[in-house]
Image (cartoon, rainbow over all chains, first blue to last red; front, side, top):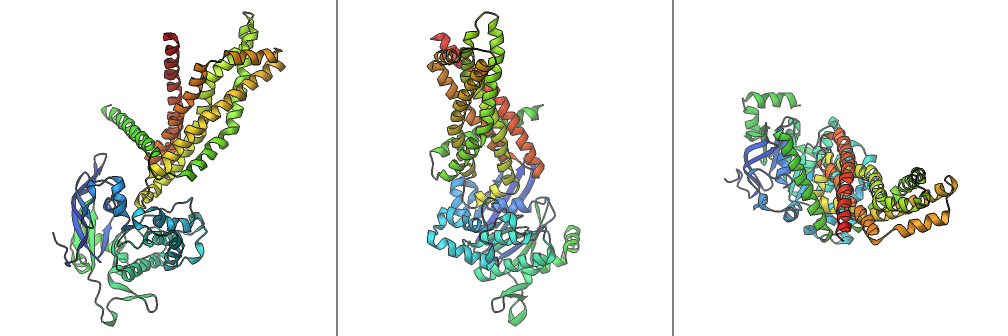
Length: 277
Length: 255
C-alpha cells in the first residue's frame, strides 16, 4: 500500500482490531498517512477516534493487526522500547491532560527533561520552554498552575507541551471540544501555524467539520501572523489534507474534501450538515 | 457467575503484575527520590497524630478491661504483660495499618484515579515516564519505611496510655507496670511486630495505587476507586494478620 501523494508513510495501520472487554472499538482499520500530510479524522462520539490516536502512540495495544510508526511496527515493542518512538510524536490530549501538580513551565519542560531520546541539555530547557509558550502566546503564565488558567489557555499550554520537543508527527485529540467558537478558531489557527512553520505531519481528531475545513483551506502567513485562504497568491488549496470518517470503529470514508462533499452516504452527509458551520 | 469469577481472577492477576513491576522498579533507574521523601512526609508525618491518638486510647482501654478481668484471678499486676504483648504482637501493627489505610490508601486511590480519568497517566506514558516507576514505586518504598516506624510509635504510646490508666484509674504500681511490660517481650514478638507492618505496607500502598490506576468513568469512578481501596486494604489487613500470626505461633510451637 503506497501513500496517495507518494510521500514516505509516517503512520500506517494494517487491519487493526482493538476491543475492550469484548466490545470492539476499532475494526479492521487500515490507512496510511504520508510525510507532511494533514489528516482530519471525523466521527461522532464513541466512534473510536481517541482510541485510534492512542493506538498510534502505543498507549493501547491492538488485539490484532500492525501499526507502523516511522516504518517500525510498534505493536511488538515493550513499554520501555516505545519511549523512543513516542519522543518523535507530540500528542494533545482531550482537555489537555496537563499535570495539575506542576506549573505551566514544568509541564512544558516535562518532555524535554524526561524523554531520554531527546537529550536536551539542561541549560537549553528554559529557552525552549519560553519559545514554545511564546508560540502559543502564553508568555506570562510560566509560574502559574493549570487550575489557574481558562480552558482555552490550558489547551494552548498543552499544545506548547506537545510541540516543545519539535516532533515530526503531531496528534490532536478533539482540540476544540468544549471551547467557545472564538477560542476554538484560535486553537485551530495554532495547529495550522505549527503545521506550516515546522512542516509536521498532523492528525486531527474532531467532531466539527469546520475544523477540517479550516485546516484544508487556510495557511499561516508568517508576514502578518494571520490565517489566509490557501488559494491566495497563487497557492493552491491544501492538497495534502485528507479526510477520514469513522463510524462505530470502522473506516467509512477516506479521501479529499471534494470527495467528502460529493459523498451521498447518509451518515457522512448528515454528519457534514449537522457539524458543518 | 462465571463472569464474576473471571473478573476476580483477572483482578488478582493485574494486582500481582502491578506488585511485580513496582518491586522490580525499586532496583531500576530512574529513582524519583524527591517523590519518595514527599510521600514519606505525607504518609509518616501526616499520619502521626491519628496513629498516636489511636495507640494511646487502645492501650488505655485495654488496661481498663484487662485490669477488671485479671482482678478476678488476683493477677492485676500482670496488666503490663498483657497490654505490651497484645499491642506489640497484634493491635499495634493492625490498628496502625488500618489508620494509614483509611488515610493513605484512599488518598493514593483518589490522587492516581483523578490523574487516570483526566488522561494524565496516558500523558505521562506519552512523555517518556513509566507511571509505575513515577507514582507507585515511590509510594511503596515510602510506606515500607514509614509504617514500621509508625507502628513502633503506636506501640510505645499505647503502653504509655496503659500506664496512665493503670496509675491514675486502676491504682496499680507504675514501676511494676513497666517492668512486667518490658520483661514480657521476646525477640519473636519484636520480629512479628515489625514484620507485620512491613507486609501491611505492601497492602496499603499497592491496593491504593491499584484501584487508582483502574479508575474510570469521571469523578464518580474516582469516588468508587477510593471506597474500594479502603475496604479492600482494611479487609486484607485483617486476613493477613490472622495468617501471619498463625505462621509465628506455629513456629513457636514447633521450636
